[in-house]
Length: 341
Image 1 (cartoon, rainbow, N blue to C red):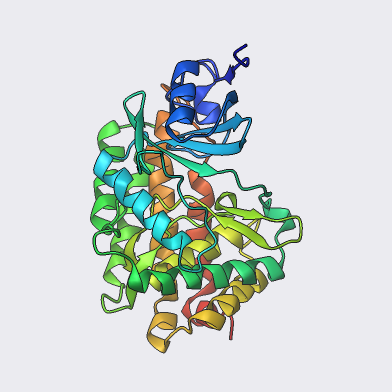
Image 2 (cartoon, rainbow, N blue to C red):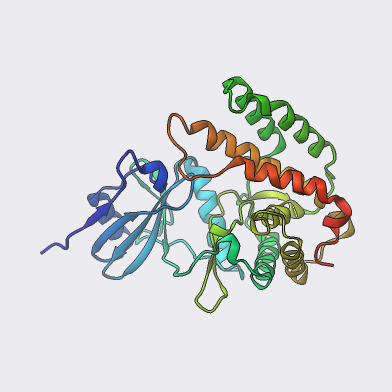
């Protein structure tokens, strides 16, 4: 008798909340399991994780797996992402390798979307209130290992990225054209702040592979308190290492205030693997400002502006990163450059 397949996909009303934009049928789940020799499918559950792609937990009689459908990446972009993650999994970066089908494929097409399968990694995510200096120090080391590993990444596996300053200016133009009363008054301040951050940028900073999105929900922790996996390299791109460091600091070290003890621990962990140059320390305020503006702007365009028509897929409040931007300006360059010293 065929095993019962439970396909727990959110209703159309709830899909934004659980980050499932494209449904996967029972027949499609069985076909992909056969293609990857995963055994008999027992269940497929849409996951309340991520904000861009459709993510699922796939259970079979041979184990548990993570299935991702790329909603915005082209086939070429998805291939690049999968190739990069596969490379990183082999060079001391704690991230699971994509599974390979019986035909030798790491990327397949499901419901017209590029799709990839990973082994399920057990672990937990940290809420901001529970983050410790020990943990952010470990995150800093892990980020530096990504930067080191990228030095030997395959040619063509690192993109220029989708969040360059010119891309952010285009998004500000979109906000202005939308003429939404909620945001139109924010446009002049955002544009001026971005112009100042870009003008103050050092164009000769050391660059390479950056994760670009190493937030708390992209790090899994084992029961022993160690990093079990680094996730979601879809925003990975070539860029200044110190920009990536500041993205991570803003993501991990800010609750009601920007906690400088956490930020110092993160930078200290990073420099244990990859020391910062004086030039990079001198750029921490400008790169951090750009990082804060990047997430302020994209959270307006990708989440807040969709709230009336589609509803945000995952709640991501843009004002939290505007607060981070203002916090950096209040601290000043000297205080930020001293983190981790």
